[in-house]
Length: 159
Ligand SMILES: [Zn+2]
Ligand SMILES: [Zn+2]
Image (cartoon, rainbow, N blue to C red; front, side, top):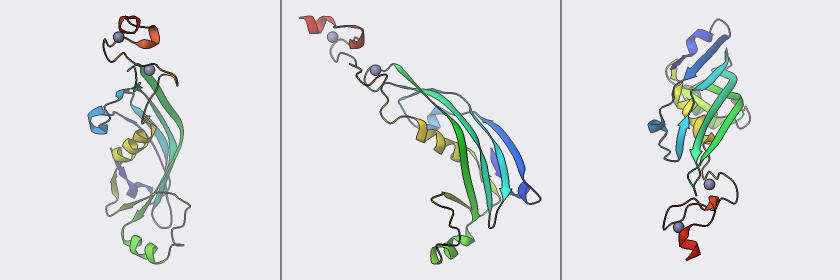
């Protein structure tokens, strides 16, 4: 999906979209599945640029890094993006105060049509746990027979 910033010139625009996510694109082998990401929010003209405020809903599961059991993850909460034209970037580097909006990440654009999917992918990447664990003391799989050691000792251990 593309964000058409131009639409907000005359007033705020309400947006909502359901993003179908391709797991291949995310390139996270531990990811088992991910639900479509839901976004709804409001695009507003700012000075300079635009801001997009809204709510995001992320839901999925990643494989436990020890036993491969699914570990669910989810996030439902506010998101905020600021967009500013690239030509303001040089000015900003000279004068840090100009676009001072805290530690907010600014998306620089040349074109008023901004691809939205990469922004959603980025939020999703942050939500996928780096080293998922089904529980803090997961015993993992036996390296010899592959049995789930959480279920009890395997034959290899009793020998
Ligand atoms: Zn586990
Ligand atoms: Zn074993």
